Amino acid sequence: MSNHRLPLRLFSTVSRCQKQPGALCQPHPRRQASTLTSSTEASEDADSSSSLSTPGPSDEAINSFDPIARSRSRKLRLPPSRYRVRPPKYYRGPLHPHQSPPTSSPSSRLFTPGPFTLPRLLQTYTSTLRPDLMTLSYTHFPPGQRPPPAPPRLRTWDNSSPYHLNRPARPPGGGGSALPLLRKPITFRNVPALSKITVHSLVKGATGDSAYLHVAGMVLQAITSVRCTVHRAKKTVASFGLKEGKAISLSCELKGEDMYHFLAQCVDVVMPGIKDWKGVSGKSGDGSGNIGWKFDSETVGAWPEVEVNYDAYPPKMIPVIDIIVHTTATNDKDARLLLSSLGVPFHGKHVN
Image 1 (cartoon, rainbow, N blue to C red):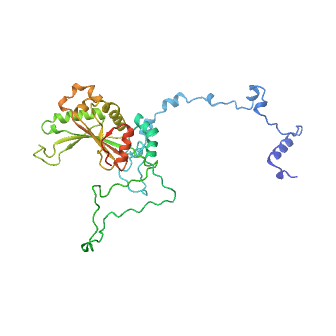
Image 2 (cartoon, rainbow, N blue to C red; image 1 turned 30 degrees about the horizontal axis):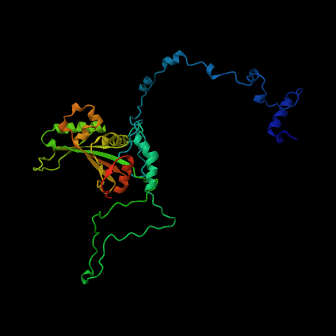
Image 3 (cartoon, rainbow, N blue to C red; image 1 turned 90 degrees about the vertical axis):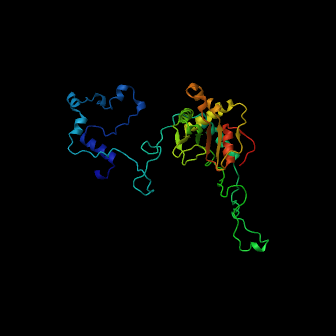
């Protein structure tokens, strides 16, 4: 048999035997780790050289290493915008080569750092209230069932009179909205949740003295930890003493952690301390899932952030605040169910 037809392993053994005629042609035995008797025998097959014993750079190389001088010695300067990543200011469609990074990226224009804390109210909503709300608002639709046809929005005439002939249809009747928001079936994707909270204060005394506006701004900033936005009068009303461009009200918009901390403080600290307070009126709501209520100046003065430094705020200048809770619900019934589960009390007849 010629050598070129032998397998590679057998060919190497035969060629080694041809070089050493006196040696026995036996394959080298494979050594397993369990058959080694000592560490000395195991180190025979290991490489004696190690990367730890490799000598480091010389002192001359260390002293000559100067990256700043090397960059200054370049004749051709790098363009300044090479390492400056600026996301596009406008969205030009999904096929445009320059796309904005996600909002979670620090290079995004819409990036918001955080969250830095995990509010207790948010934990309660995520772990307990959210599945309970989905169960309470669940509507079962058997497989294959089609939704009923929507009734016509415009009312037709019953032709009980000859004057009804060729008359156009009448607009919808009743006291409700002509085009209410559609309520989709509640699933795990659209469980009602808090969207934002707006704290607003109309400072009537600001028409004669700007100190009222400054005190109201300090109070709102203390209880919300958010910088206030000043609103000015759009036109002059002589009976109210308003002048166009005069600062008349303040507002703060809370989202994320500040929103949950503020609502938890309202429910746990402020509302239980109000004497003879029945709760939020059941008629409050705009029909789109937003609920609001008002706190008078005495209640605002009992806020922990205001009460701890009460001498800094003149009692007569403490403002009245309006709180509007915006939710993702599309009607007042779901929004009221959400706020009731969070601890906001309601009284009176509920108007949905």
